[in-house]
Length: 201
Ligand SMILES: Nc1nc2c(ncn2[C@@H]2O[C@H](COP(=O)(O)OP(=O)(O)OP(=O)(O)O)[C@@H](O)[C@H]2O)c(=O)[nH]1
Ligand SMILES: [Mg+2]
Image (cartoon, rainbow, N blue to C red; front, top):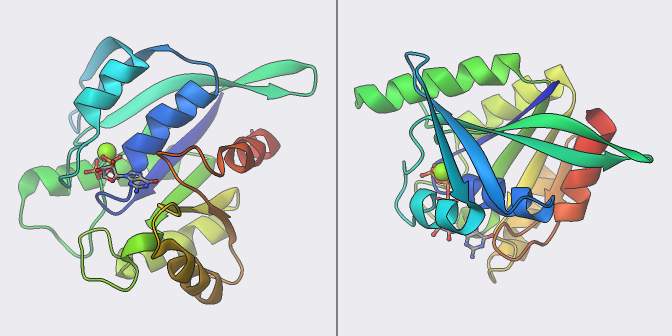
């Protein structure tokens, strides 16, 4: 089965997309598997709405473990299954916090194991100095993703007014990368992401 990873800096909107995209693909109750850095798996059954309340937060580092969901996507006349992995936010350098370091190591392990890479960037924070602002780690993900193939940038938070300028910056900076403008909370760009996954599944 195809493994698809969603990764990026903290607070860019990964978990919001993870759950809203699952809903867009027809899920209303979800079985989520949380895998910590020691490989322990915790399975939880939630309605998508409950999961949103528990797992999305305006504070960074809300997601600590890799979280896996099985989804299915329409392809030709049938459907194809794939695994989507939500991950903890990646930061530059070696983080002082041990838990953050271990979570990042786990994310990188899943990046290596995935054949489809969705790299999320916060378009509204490009010209600011926030935790979600694009930085060195994004350039490294981009380099790795382009070398691996089946890689795109999800330019999130396009519903905010700063989004358009942020998107223009990304287009200039990452000229060889397929960039999908989107909003995880408004559902904008979801059809394009579905198409991208379906093409590469
Ligand atoms: N305006 C706007 N806000 C968004 C969008 N996507 C996410 N957010 C907000 O951004 C904040 C962070 O969202 P999360 O989905 O928890 O982000 P994350 O990348 O999973 O964060 P970590 O797990 O901490 O790395 C929340 O307050 C969301 O409501 C979007 O498309 N537009
Ligand atoms: Mg998260």
